[in-house]
Image (cartoon, rainbow, N blue to C red; front, side, top):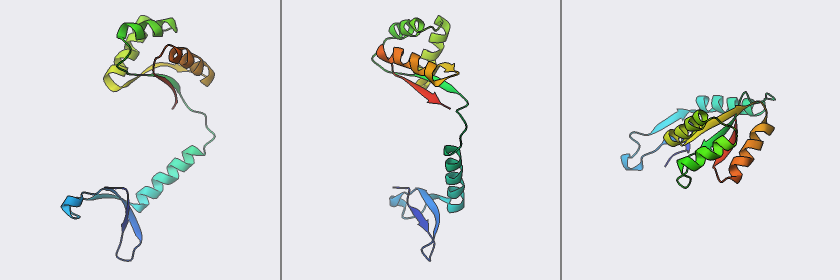
Length: 129
């Protein structure tokens, strides 16, 4: 159980509980202060309302247990990757769950390749970082 407010004796919120272990009866609980939480919220809102474009647009391949290595490699190469780049993306997807296929200058280019690979039943996503 976690995520609720941490209150002082007067009922004022002084933090957010991040880990509550009921079996310890209040010993070993963790919380972040309300000042830290407010700063994080302000940073998130500022970034969300910023008109800046993403600094990087990436097409990401997700690991799945249905496609064979040979099939994924063939599809990535058919989409324009070299054998080495296809291998690198597949290895990263295997090790971490996802691997960057390529970085793009425009969302349109990334979406075009994503559509081709998705049509070939590969799990891919455009990420704006």
